[in-house]
Image 1 (tube, helix red, strand yellow):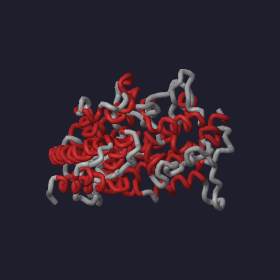
Image 2 (tube, rainbow, N blue to C red):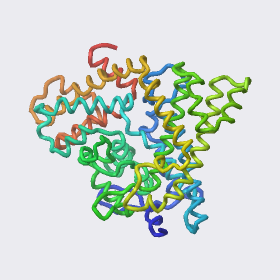
Image 3 (cartoon, one colour):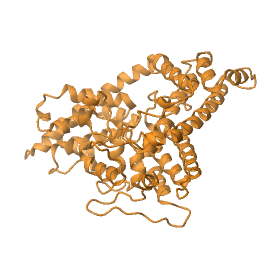
Image 4 (cartoon, one colour):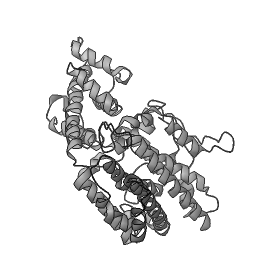
Length: 445
């Protein structure tokens, strides 16, 4: 197991194509290679744009409501604690050469990057793009794509786009991307398979596009994350990234819903009694010095602490399982404290029943369909005309190419690559910019 962890925490980092991976030495002793990963992510444009992307409530005018940036920062805070505690646990169990702070930085950075590939309007944006490509499957401009290439668009997933951004698009375009360490890149991946496996797995989630298949294989093979039957395995630290995300979106979405007067403290009683205990819930509820918003914040803090401690315990006990070919779906399914598992389940159920289907949010999300469809209707056919190499492009197509600017691919690129650059361009938009661009394409502003 020690040799496994040595490989899993490899400091090798992605480099420019055609060159060997490099282990960037620390500057002074205070800044490790894994801390450099964190810094590169924090200072990236793709991360900064999350401040204008939907978490749950699109285009909210309430300053207290989470966007993708604040959500990612909170997930990263929990992830750092999970990574640090896991590193300390490994130290106590004979892995004295592992630096707990390395694990903290790896998980924290993976958490920061976990939503970096989400399109405008969150998961609704994903669905619009997938449905658009499904509806256009028989169109002439789709016929030149291979079956695997078309699957990438048909099942388009923000997780795969996150992998593409950090390994290809950000900082060094198609030249190593952010050039992160292999350990950090692999810890970002929840679904270690391509879109071609989505139908057989009966789920529309995957970890990398065909364009990044070579990079994915290089990273996961180097870390020993391959099974005997040719499948890729998850990096064990990705389970900590995932559970940090689950904890945040289950609990902190409740705070937003209360801010927007969608739910009350009474609606949350069963949830917080399961997660914090009845006595603690009653103590907070009876504190007349606290507003309802502060009561929910305090209860959420206590719940997060309980869930974080238990997740670390589960990770420690399940480590042989997580390092085997028979990995679990996630850590929560292994929880032994039924009160915590039940509390998370109740929180997710409440979210589906009262929060995510709240009429004002639904109206805006339905509007986002029109916005993203407008962009695709304008960009994809124009890109096909550009690809066909007609000597005289229509004036409209030339305008579209000018609109994409530096995101416009070279004429010699294959059609699949050209369509990917359109998706890169759209996913790189904030909610506001996508809305503004669609309005201008309709001649309005």
